[in-house]
Length: 342
Ligand SMILES: *Cc1c(COP(=O)(O)O)cnc(C)c1O
Ligand code: SF4
Image (cartoon, rainbow, N blue to C red):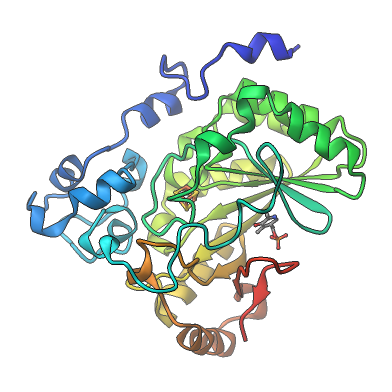
């Protein structure tokens, strides 16, 4: 039996690592120097930016590093994680809170922008730091509901009976320990009008060992329909280790979807996008959204124009079965849903 008291004193991310995955997270690469050395690339300051690293630190777990091709500066996975000078450019239209999250917070850590579903910011932490992340400037320490054991958030959901789906997001919710997650998920399941639990996470991709037996055992018993939306931008991220844990999630009745961000130099080609969709379907993951980049300061070098994006989508539609084509969307502050880009 998990009680609020029994988990109250646990730190958010357990530094005294108990599980294999927690050790891997503690041992993730945390400097450009160590990452480049592991990839047989010259540790030369001309190729990375200390200043950008100070703004948003480097974090990359070994399982992701293993999928980066050695000795290649233009590797599409390396580009997602290495801090570079381009991030220091100030470009008009790229701001600090591009999606209006600060205004949408209705209770501590709860974003309620769309009908029928709320998004919970469960933690500010992630197992990887994606350079293009729209949350790179978000005030997480103030937005973190975990310190009050989500009581405000759960109270808000309980009193709004048109909420049928709760989305765990962050940061990355699967960075939380099993006991904290289980407490949160079971609390949500006890609210009768909530039917579905959705988890937005990159951990099955970047730290697949997170989906271990202990997690699967309690997750399977959860009395809610389960949807896990993973985040894969390039087929190279889908190794055999990832395929294995995706099948484990499926085996405990989880619907698997993917969201990607369209990123210059990573997946802005027909070949990259079509291969990604084919690999996702091979793993029984449906391509859900392809997001246009959120216009966050420091990410402008990843931007692909909407004109170019729609052209890529036309190409994909002509080339792939319909179920392999994700919806191209962008988030516009104040709108009632993610907006299709046509
Ligand atoms: C993206 C998002 C959702 C989920 O939107 P769907 O279209 O249902 O995937 C929900 N709430 C917030 C605040 C979001 O940003
Ligand atoms: S895992 Fe998601 S939330 Fe975390 S840094 Fe990457 S894009 Fe941002």
